Length: 95
Image (spheres, rainbow, N blue to C red):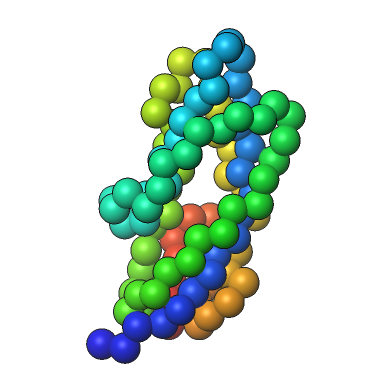
């Protein structure tokens, strides 16, 4: 099956307290895509996800590793390149 190149962008913000910066993971269809440590306060960042995948549905999930002192918010997930669209906030449908 032919693969399509798709870029997805979203705004990510982590509110946290304490001295230790929280880490989060990004999964695409239960596959670990990246793990990052959030080092900023009062900042939202644009994240770019680049995929080369066959047609189908892909669930995009952000997850904090330690939810005790932090909350992650992901907004405005959108396709910026490629034959795809976002459904239900975090489902990427590649055509």
